[in-house]
Image (cartoon, rainbow, N blue to C red; front, side):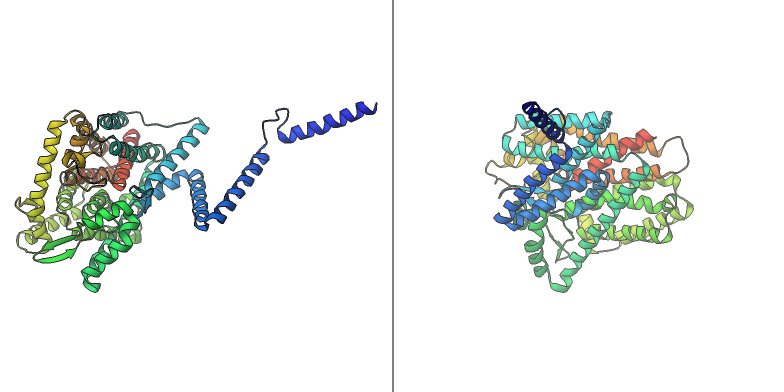
Amino acid sequence: MIIKKNIKTILARAKKFSIFLGGNNFLKLRKNAYFGLFFILASLALAALIAWQAVYFLFFLAAVLFLAIVFWKTEESLISLVFYLPFQIALNVTESIDMASSRIFVIVLFLAWLIKSLAKKKLIIPYGMTTWLLAIFLGLAALSAYFSIDQEKSAIRMLFFFSIVPLYFISAAYLNSTIKIAKVIYVLLFSSSIAAIAGIVQFLSQFIFGIDAIMDFWSKNIAYLFYGQSFGKIVVANPSWLVNVGGETLFRAISFFPDPHMFSFYLGLAAPIALSLAFFSNIFNLSNWRRFLLYICNAVIFLALVLTFSRAGYVGAFFGIAAIIFLGWKFFNKRIKFIIGAVVLIGGIVVFNSSSAVVSRFFSSFNLSEGSNSERLLNWRQSIKIIEDYPATGAGVGAYAEAVNARAPERSSITAHNTYFDIAAEMGIPALLIWIIILILTIKKFISILRSRDCELSKEKVISLGMIGALVWFSVQMFFDTAIYSPVLLALLMVYLAISVNLEEKK
């Protein structure tokens, strides 16, 4: 009797213990048990980090906080990423490898979006020509990496693509309404204005502190923070920060970018949109104060562009703005048409009757005997030779420098100074054709939105007009510089591709 009672007591206690562990399944813990176990392990890890080196403890806390915020507010984190792009710091993975922190941001965003979508059993992937062309382009890049003359460098470059392109899918999933797209554009214009102001201040500082002092400050305090140790050394050793205009050497506006060309590229992706919104600010029902801020935004962006002294940026701006005026002319009221006419007339008089630094810099673009122009032509001839040697798959994505010079250092700044030649030389002519088709198709989508049957001007049409100007500017400037390997520019381009897909679907 006593034995039977003891057995019942033991079974009752075992049942209670099993309930605590998760019912009849002893291997299945309840949530509080999971949290308790996680708390214990996390406490041990933090204790070890504090005992080892306190700074790692801070890094760990920052990483946990960052992950929590991204998984909690994924859509807001996407908008934050757009703002963060021009100000991102570099992460020094190893002594010879730097990584833009935005790439980590994109990967975490992608995982958060994927996990949350699968949990809801609602994974939204844009199914259309843009997605297929992007997949084919990545496939051709991977094929070039397989046949590369330097597979290690090609593998690193493929990791770059795979850490940026997912932003297209994230943006397509979250930017699914005009309100959300407009919000991203406002954030973009705000961040580009701050970057532009930083570039203007940096340019003007040379007249206060001297060009040598500013060069020294930028080399020691800015370059390594925003470019990374490895890439920063290349930039500092071979800077394109200076320009000689009329016998005077000037430190060009670069803001937080490694050179004025990338800075002008970035401004080119924002300026046409800011201009389009300024032309049709009444469509967005902006208050007088916000309209004034929009005009200020345009002023600082275009002034910063001028101070980059980037001739490629000037040429891109000419075609980008011309596209906006040509396609948006029928929507302009008489006042805007008069202003545009007056600006064009005054600008023409100034250009042809002025010897200013900016005007002379612009016209030097057409002087083939000028130093940088003749060097660029030499680079183009080298890239054409590589294309002739490797027409189908290219020399290998990321292997351009080695194809030009087999003794090129591990990290080299050698490029074709032409995005189209770079793509054809590294990934083959088929990859170049796909890239061109992607750009043309995206511009065509925005034009179709602009010319939709609805004759009235709408927010979608204003945004599309600005996007057309930005992509035309970008496409033209790519003839003179390499832009596809900038994490800032490629990330913004992925956002624009997603916006084109969503606006077309909305139409």
